[in-house]
Image 1 (cartoon, rainbow, N blue to C red):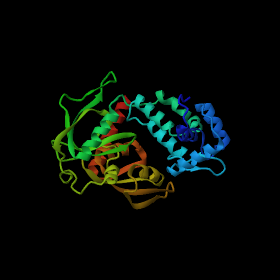
Image 2 (image 1 turned 180 degrees about the horizontal axis):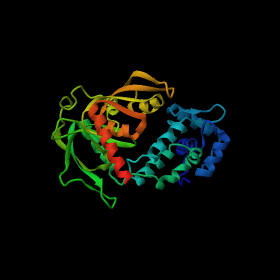
Image 3 (image 1 turned 90 degrees about the vertical axis):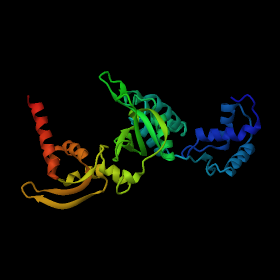
Image 4 (image 1 turned 135 degrees about the vertical axis):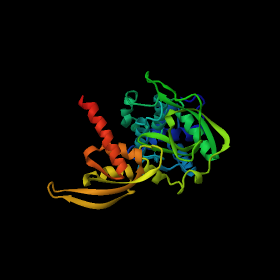
Length: 331
């Protein structure tokens, strides 16, 4: 309840009531607004004052609809807010406390009716989140470095046997940052490691003690021979392994089309359709440009549904790896 009770605050109080109690399915009459003003703020007023202040809010560009009762139109629809909350809820990039704070902020963008629809957030403690509490800070610093075109230094961490993050080495990494990208539920920094002229990828949630250096970033022309195209880069680096991309041909079932689009977008070519008359099934010969190490793991992930045709070196590597797996599991 407001101690001052001044009429000068009436439009703010009405705005708060509309934000918390109204939407397209819950329109407020002037009488209901008067009741809520009394119960929420101890403010007495009449219908004329309510109407006058609502008109004033509309003149200030608040999108308030008054036909059939008043309600405020929001920046985010409920489905959009839920999508944003779920994105945070299932993100492995940020810590549990950071996720909870961000979700609470997003929930406040809705009204009291919306809050009842997102009770699934109580499962937050059971979901996997990063142990790195610096993630938000790291994102801010890296973004600033990218905008200023400055190199950064940072400590890169990994989990030890006690499942605690610890530095991989004593000396910091120095890189030229170019882009932050999200894939497979994680944030990655696309950059150039200072000692070489190729592309490197680092997990944002594994970076700590990030510092912006005075030195300018290495020109992209020295790192990306054919220019930098983010969608193409992401399609070629499905697991964010570093190294050059190669042209790969493989056979797969037409039932794999959905998975191909999920992983490679539409940046692949169907070279040939082959019908297996014995099983009456269709196999596709696919060509795609992709990171070789990533393709190895991707092909093994889908097992018998993918057969590498070219290059022969990748086919042989997968065969040797499969033999090692077989021997390890046959003892």
